[in-house]
Every structure is written in structure tokens, then in C-alpha cells.
Image (cartoon, rainbow, N blue to C red):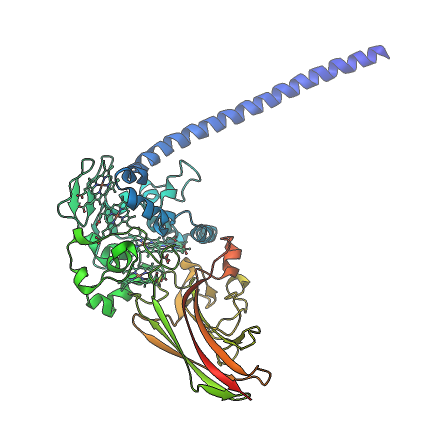
Length: 458
Ligand code: HEC
Ligand code: HEC
Ligand code: HEC
Ligand code: HEC
Ligand code: HEC
């Protein structure tokens, strides 16, 4: 018995050592492979990183231009790659790319506009976390080394940028700038809409204009009057962003206060009074059961392009009309009186793209936006899928739209004053879509408000 036990032990030792040596060999091979991979990646990455570093870090510029650095950090340009909405839609595009090489140009171009230094470094799709270089987004040293535009119409990232390994001259609006750190070159382009239009004008491979803020501006009264994007989005006395006067527009660059916050409804800073609402009711006094006719005028007073303008297939701008009685009971939502099923200009929660609720809002509100459909005529939110703009009712520059509502005063309304309130709301994208791409909570911002009152008697 003892002998057998002894033999068993010997056998198990032999077995174990051979197994061990086998697994050691495997481990060794794996380690070698990993090391080789790392070395190869390092070699490749060194070249990529070198090209990345043609663009100086914004912190360097911030050392001498601290105010612009702080403003830029608050702007959407600094978050153009990292923000959840971009990341969510970009991942959706990357997953569609598998199995459809035709859309490769469209998807590579996302990086050209959203993280130009990653594009020029050839880091597409950007390597996660590698020194976080792609996360710098649209930064100082990209914009201020743009030399020109390829072709006549600014669009699809057709800027010229030859930023090299040395410190390149910085281009800007001043004719007499002298800096101890970098050369300076006067650039008229930086004071003109064409500079912005290289990115804020986008057409996909199907020939569909995904967003055309530049084209909309070009065809507007504002452009004829000489207003540039910069005059509304980068200028202002006291940095409160009023739209500057015509006289001030002609002033020397040195007299203008420039901001790099780039205000907009998706940003922390907004241009006030962009859209104006006015509510009127057909009579000051009415009886229970009577029908009121309510008119709401909506004026795009200050946007130098349509509103909403960029990513118009995502943005939601909707009008909410409520009747609030004298006892302050729950407000009654007045719906547009159009027929069901709701067309695109009325909020609806019927399943749309990928079976997501279309608007994710109370139904029956007037909504201003545009809608794209794919080749199969299905509603789509993905830029690369869009084959046609199926609908567009956005507010044109300086346009006034009149919306009409009819409301039969319910018999149980308490006698006294009733307030008819109008609110214009903005959201970057439907919450339902945001949930789908995991972009988080989409806040609702009030763009404009107005109210009128009616005295209700028995
Ligand atoms: C989206 C492109 C863009 C980015 C990003 C950007 N700038 Fe500018 N910057 C401009 C434009 C355009 C002007 C000219 C505005 C005008 O005068 O019409 C300007 C003007 C300037 C000026 C001249 C100041 C003046 O009062 O006219 C300086 C200095 C400057 N930027 C530095 C910076 C720094 C530093 C950063 C980064 C923290 C930065 N910029 C980021 C586009 C950009
Ligand atoms: C020609 C330049 C250009 C290209 C190419 C481009 N974008 Fe954009 N993108 C923009 C501009 C400009 C905006 C900004 C507007 C705004 O904030 O409303 C924007 C906004 C967005 C937004 C909304 C972000 C937000 O904060 O609400 C998403 C999402 C987005 N782009 C995704 C993509 C994806 C995905 C691709 C590639 C399939 C792409 N973009 C290609 C210029 C571009
Ligand atoms: C060592 C300090 C210093 C650093 C670092 C620095 N700048 Fe400047 N920059 C200046 C000075 C000084 C001026 C000229 C100011 C004046 O004339 O009033 C200037 C002017 C400019 C102008 C205006 C050029 C024109 O002709 O309109 C731009 C644009 C600019 N810098 C961008 C940048 C960018 C981008 C970076 C980072 C890559 C940067 N600067 C880093 C000091 C610096
Ligand atoms: C390299 C491309 C690029 C250039 C050049 C550029 N932008 Fe942008 N801009 C973007 C992108 C991309 C976003 C959206 C970032 C995001 O949210 O993902 C944006 C966002 C904005 C926003 C914020 C909109 C909001 O919803 O709040 C404004 C305003 C804006 N840009 C104005 C300008 C103006 C004015 C210029 C010219 C002086 C300009 N941009 C130049 C790409 C660019
Ligand atoms: C006459 C002034 C004016 C001019 C010119 C102008 N904008 Fe705007 N822009 C606005 C106002 C007002 C808004 C609404 C947001 C706000 O009130 O903050 C806006 C909004 C935006 C937004 C936010 C997104 C959206 O859907 O509304 C972007 C991006 C933008 N503008 C880019 C540009 C670009 C690029 C140009 C030049 C081609 C330009 N703007 C010209 C006034 C102007």
C-alpha cells in the first residue's frame, strides 16, 4: 500500500513538472508576442505622436493668453471630441462601418472636423487614452495655423493646414501683432464666415447637406448687410454678446473685444433674445364653453442662419402652449389642431429610427426641425445614412411664423383670469435617442417666453 502511494506521488510530480514546463512555454510565447506587439505599436505610435505634436497643446498658448484659454475651455470646440453626444453618434457610425466600406470617407471625416490634430496624425479612429491627444478637440493651434481654403465653397473640412514640427506662425486679425514666442501673420480669412464654414457646412457621400449653417447665412439678409459669423459669435462689449452695431462691425480689430466661448444653445453662454414670442387672444373676455382663437408669433430675430441650424436632424425646438386658470390647477396643454397621425411638424412618440420613440415629448406640440430619411425612406438620425431631407420647417433668418390654436374653454374652468402661456424650448437631441446611444440626460433650455390673459365669466 505504501509502495503504491509512493509511485503515485512520483507520477504526479513528473506529470506536474511536464505540465508546468508546457504552461511556462505557452506563457513565454504569449509574453514574447505581447512584447513584439507593444514594440510594433510603439514604433507606429511614435510616428503618430510626432505628427500629433506638430500641434502645440492649448495649455502652452494659455500661458500667455490665459483669458482665451479659459473661454475656449468653456466652449463646445474644446469638447468637440469628448462630449457624450459626439461619442455616442460616432460609435454608432463606427458600428455601421463594419460591413459597409462605402461610408468610410464619411466616417473618417468625422475626425477631420471634430479632432483635426488626430486626423492629421493619422490616428483614426483615435487610439483610446493614448496620451489623450485626440481629446484636445478643436484647439488654438489648429485654428490659428489655418492658411486658406481649398476650392471656392467652404465645406467638409476643406481648410488648408500645414502645421509642421517647428513653431508655426500664428494667424489672426491683427496687422501689428508681435510676440516673443511665435511669428504672427495677419489673416483676413480669420475675420470672415468662410473660415467657420469649412466645418459648419457639411455634405455626406450621398450628396445630402447634413448641416449648412454657412450656406444659410450666405443667402441671408445678415450676409448682405456684412455680418460675419464672428460678429455675432465672437464679439461683444462686456462679453455679453449683444449683436454688434453696424458701425462697430467696421471698427479696427484692435477695438473689438473677442471671446472664445462661442455662444449657442448647446453651450454655457447664449446670445440673448435670439427668438421672440408674442401671444395674442382674439378677445379679452370670454364665457365658459366659448372658443378662443390664440395666435402666437415666433420670430427668428437674431440667428444669422436658420434656427436650429447645426445638426438639425438632432436638435429639437418646440412650442408649448398652456392655459393656466385662476385656481392654478394643472395647466392644460393646447395642442395643434392638425390631423393624426402626426406629421413631422407635430411632436409624436410613434416608433421611428431603430424603433426609438420619435420625439420623446408630450404629443401635439409644434416642433421646428428637419428630418432625414435613408435609402429605404426610413427616418434616420445617422448622418452617413441620410439619403434625402424629407422635411424642414426651421425658422429662417428674420422670419416670423404665426401659429394658430383654437381652445374651447372647459365648463369647469374657475371664473376669473386665465393665462395663455407660450414657451419655446430647446433640446440637443431627443431623450429617447440619447438613451439609445447612452449620452445621458439631455437638459431642456427655455429659448423664449410670452403670455396673454383672458377674463373668463359664466
Ligand atoms: C474655432 C477656431 C478657434 C479656436 C479653437 C481658437 N481661436 Fe483664437 N481666434 C479665432 C478667430 C476666428 C479669431 C478672430 C476673430 C476676429 O477678430 O474676427 C481669433 C482671435 C484670436 C486672437 C486675437 C485676439 C483678438 O482680440 O482679436 C488671439 C490672441 C487668439 N485668438 C488666441 C487663441 C487661443 C490662445 C486659443 C486657445 C485657447 C484660441 N485662440 C482658440 C479662432 C479660434
Ligand atoms: C464638415 C465638418 C464635420 C464633419 C465631417 C462631421 N461633423 Fe459633426 N459637427 C460639425 C459641426 C460644425 C457641429 C456643430 C454644431 C453644433 O454644435 O450644433 C457638429 C455636431 C455634431 C454632433 C452634435 C454634437 C452636440 O454636442 O450636440 C454630433 C453628434 C456629430 N457632429 C457627429 C458627427 C459624426 C458621427 C460625424 C461623422 C459621421 C460627423 N459629426 C462629421 C462638423 C462636422
Ligand atoms: C510667450 C507668450 C506667448 C505664447 C506662449 C503664445 N503667444 Fe500668442 N501672442 C503673444 C503676444 C505677446 C502676442 C501679440 C499681442 C499683441 O500684439 O497685442 C500674441 C499674438 C497672438 C495672435 C494674434 C496674431 C495676429 O496677427 O492677429 C494669435 C492668433 C496668437 N497669439 C495665438 C497663439 C497660439 C495659438 C499659441 C499657442 C500655440 C500662442 N499664441 C502662444 C504671446 C504668446
Ligand atoms: C475644425 C472645425 C470647426 C471650425 C473651423 C469652427 N467650428 Fe464651430 N464647431 C465645430 C464643432 C465640431 C462643434 C460642435 C462640437 C460638439 O458639440 O461636438 C462646433 C460648435 C460651435 C458652436 C456651439 C454651438 C452650440 O450648439 O452651442 C458655435 C457657436 C460655433 N461652433 C461657431 C463657430 C464659429 C463662429 C466659427 C468660426 C470663427 C467656428 N465655429 C469654427 C467645428 C468647427
Ligand atoms: C446675426 C447674428 C448671427 C450670425 C451672423 C451668425 N449667427 Fe450663429 N447664432 C446666432 C444666434 C442668435 C444663435 C442662437 C443661439 C443663441 O441665441 O445663443 C446662433 C446659433 C448658432 C449655432 C448653434 C446651433 C444651432 O442649431 O442654432 C451655431 C453652431 C452657429 N450659430 C454657427 C454660426 C456660423 C458658423 C455662422 C456663420 C456662417 C453664424 N453662426 C452666423 C447668431 C448669429
